[in-house]
Image (cartoon, rainbow, N blue to C red):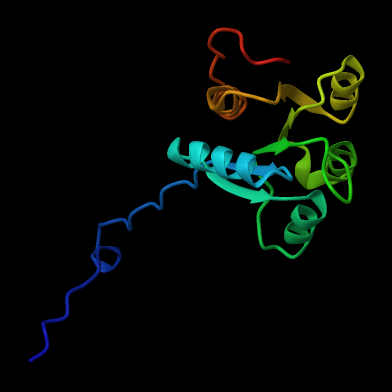
Length: 157
């Protein structure tokens, strides 16, 4: 015996179908360190963000071009990458209209004044130096995606 057919809520007159939940904000991490990618991805996922990570800029750009990933709300980008440095990755991505609204945060061991200046020139909104505290990264993401105020002034703009 089969159960009786029942109408779905969207088929019942006067009942609106449920509204799908909005997608969580997305973060792309491009860093050649597997450890950094794993730690950042786990931390941000725990805080409710969708995270995709790549070991180099060419892999990330290829995935974007093939439509395997969407343009993120925020990009955490290392400078010292294999194949193409982070400045070049940023320059290429910034030249694409889809990346107009993507926030760029440099996440790198390069801590010189010229490095920071070059980061600004390619459109970085903030600069986090390695070694970093995971909370610094979470704070940066919250600040730029949700408009939250950074705590303790740890975010370097």
